[in-house]
Image (cartoon, rainbow, N blue to C red; front, side):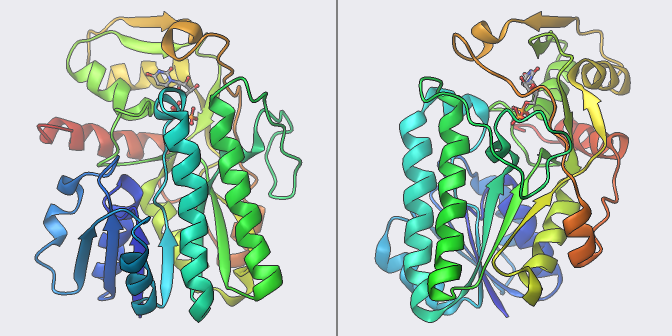
Length: 323
Ligand code: UDP
């Protein structure tokens, strides 16, 4: 089996590549290093079964050739991170929508299977907890840049499902909830690497809003294993799956936990959303997946709890100079 990972030098992409290579598979990646980092794949370069192309997925002939070679495509190339989305909405919308269009255009010709990385953001500000795959999405207004990401991912899902219905192009959609682990950067807003770095360097730990909002954090290893299983499950085609953890923690408790685990003397500071992101920024208060569908399909069970996840991230950031 040959696999292509778009966005393969990113946090999740590089972990996926590593797992596939451990299973002795042939892995091709394409990444333009816009948010991915070459350091993420440095340790894979010497593997004979690893092939990397540093190029944009908008280079049609390069993408076409890579897709031709692959049996399964994991499409992860996208703009992610709330900070990036708020700061660069044009890049977010164009990369996410046009990128998926390009991948399907080529995958469709040879009916290659495409796994699409979508996001729990598509649930929008729904307060019907836990979120089930067929629930309504509750989108915010177009005047708030944050919702452009949710909308772009929803369009990606519509497009993938349209290819499946109309042209029988095999597709599987994974809606990722907060995914964490070594190699994730805090540069685009992700809370755990940011808090850990702040705690380890004695900087204030910056909680946005009241900190009473909560999230469920899943280990990237669990997420990657689920992606591989779903991509090989015939009955999963044409379907949407939540992927993540349902262990909920408030951001205040998360900050306390990280402070304690790192034995940090950093103060904990609350910052209004307007200052942290943009004026009138809307955050999701709770985001909990219903995991019954993925459990039934592939027997999915998160194997790591928040303490184990944090220990791995703290160890990684401590040992990596430019983490
Ligand atoms: N957050 C925070 N401080 C930070 C970064 C994020 O308090 O330095 C909060 C953010 O407002 C959100 C939660 O942590 O409520 C998770 O943020 P992240 O960007 O990691 O993921 P999201 O779930 O928002 O996509």
